[in-house]
Image 1 (tube, rainbow, N blue to C red):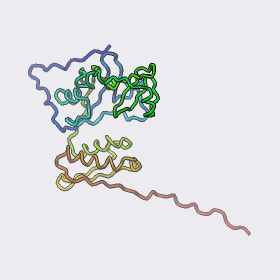
Image 2: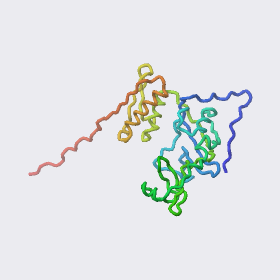
Image 3: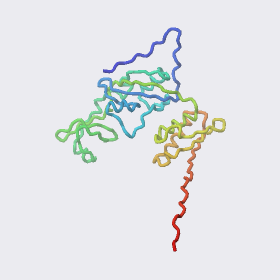
Length: 262
């Protein structure tokens, strides 16, 4: 059973922290569950993921970067962070369907002929997730050549319980850039991206760490992060990326120990 923790009361004589503002950079840890079932939806905590049988070995479990107003989180979650979140304070909130993944729409449950799916290269199987007609759905039943497919989001109609804490608020432009890069290039921790702010805070020079040199999407990530820097860090209008390829020290050749005899 899930118990909701009420917001800490504001005691007489105390002042509640100011709400966060648009474009604030925050590091947030969270756990999201379905209220009705207690099923884990997502978490930044590796131990919780293991306990719930949802651990992903190739995932980095850590507080995520949240930019207030960016819209990368479900609507109700981001709204609560902006209005009620405080650094270091854990909150538990309920997010209704209309501010999560929406209400269930009966019109998105469709019956499709098995022959039509087979022509599209899809073998009908109950529980199978398919992409059909530019939509993603789940096959609910197969009977007499007719296939029932639900194109609603799997969490549509569900109330979510979110427990979260704002761990830190990032203030310095250099650190913000480090976390923007780390968000897309997880192989390197934020501090590995060396950032120097120059020209009166107008230019950011970034040294890309060796750990991500061979990332397939490195060039795309660099371009996207540059646009994010211009959008969210108003003082910077130029970003320069550097990649340092240094000669590795080689071992000294072994001296010949064998001498000719005779």
